[in-house]
Length: 115
Image 1 (cartoon, one colour):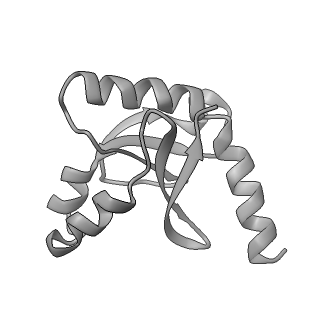
Image 2: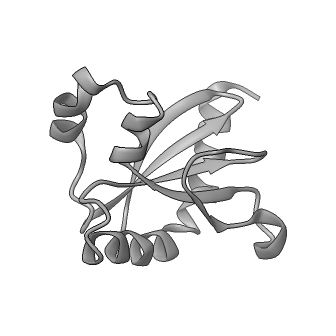
């Protein structure tokens, strides 16, 4: 299976989580935690954010942790000199969820539409 097929399968799988992630993003923003909610999707262990969805409990393929740009900067995933670049590319969280995906394809930021 090629990278394109793997990416399309991963994207289709992650789309099932969008309603939950959208609600969590709204809470993160409403509670003034961050204006830049990021969800980390992974299949193993990860020390970023707080666990939101556990694949074993939800019958899915992904664990998803709720995080933020601020934590990504604190953990040097996004370098402080790149904050403005990141913010300028960050899509409106009222319309998209930002998912940092760790997979066999590497680590990528993906934006999935809420509707």
